[in-house]
Image 1 (tube, rainbow, N blue to C red):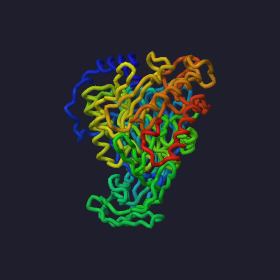
Image 2 (image 1 turned 135 degrees about the vertical axis):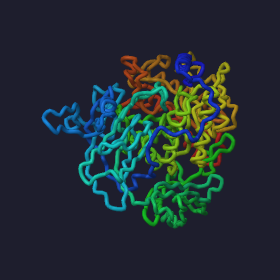
Image 3 (image 1 turned 60 degrees about the vertical axis):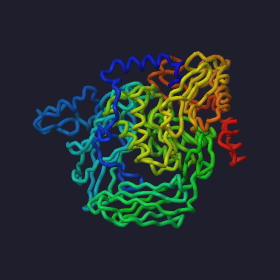
Image 4 (image 1 turned 180 degrees about the vertical axis):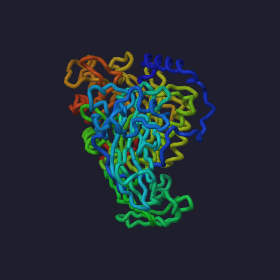
Length: 632
């Protein structure tokens, strides 16, 4: 939305993009769930951190290939050999125009943009090559697991293709059991971060297009038949019931599997079927509930006859009752902040230490909730949020003006949703799955997004579904009336009164927000840009004083919204964006952060911190209050 009617330039851009694409406005009659996803990878392995792994991180020799010479020029030779083969001259007159050994390395994990000045704005193909030895024992299997690669990744081992993954923020794994050698393996990735009109996200985003193998790459060794996936959760409708399932992968599919929670003196045994699957529901009334105030997690063991996986999990329920959000049956107000996966000083964040820094600032702000925008963040971020007691809004990058009428684009969005849910379904911190952000209304968009909503509920019926929806302006009233809201559990909305449009900052509190839905509202974005250290009066744009005044006015406005049950202002820390070139102010940074890109606090940080502190004290003093009183 970016302030709906106030954002005429964005809407004009939207119209031009849609009209310029043949078929882009085609009205779908529905999306076939059988439409194949563009990625060609193996089913995702749950919790690779709890398996036997070999880290392939470090310096990978890399070749920059903007014309994709290493792919197209060599594909159709009698003996295919592109940059995915670690070729070396065999004779003095052997012409080979690339050499991994002589190429400058890039650190993996990491984005290439922040590692070399000449790659700062680069969008295209980079080849990564890694040699390794691996003596795989008999009756064992080996997978290459990639936390994320932006955007299209083609993998090769010893010159042979392994598979293709499309999507820059979700994990994938590829089996190499029958291809790995005891010595002298060469693993290559062709990673291409070129923006695509038919991509998810599409060509126009308000964040940096960091390319590369941006998250960890590991070898994962498992038994011939192993525990590939599992899920455990409390039944929202019957909180004393622990429900779950296990999925084995391998020839010995029929096995006895026991799920244990030793500290709770819980154990339950199931028999898997011919496909290696078993589901269960069992009473577990004494499990301690996870919450932001008490982020208790249990050691959980899933043990089959041939494999054993240990994990940590919290258990809680999150439901709605009218406009109330109920965490473990008690009304909760989400004191939040939006976060991009940006490291201090720029670059893609991926480590636990970086997650602890970002989430630590959110805790200092008084948050019990974070919106991880606008794509699935790394697994360390989600697990650290769970450990620190922060509820999470998790989102796929269905953002702005993607091609709604294209079945292939829908298949890609559905794939990214599935991969996000598969990775994080066991994390108690994840409260909301978001299927979209700021998407202009149309029948095609509604069909697309309702299909994703149905898929999300099928994949995980225990969590609430949301999206940042559109609003209608009626004078000084923002009306929440997006038809998408009929299909959501929680209404999200972004509004930028006082920043985009012509509303003076001093008049924000005179507006009203009216909802046509008896559902919880989370104001998922509001904010203003400010350069750290730039001071002035409260009416001067780009100053810290202007941003702080806007936050005071927004808080006054939101305190009067009856259905408000949470907020996640935009944004915790300044982040890189190619849409923000203003010299001396932005310099390719989106300046809406409460912190500078170096972690320096702006005045508005203290404004929001004081408000959240008052809400937290009110919650602590009256846990039996109604949810709506949290905003007053």
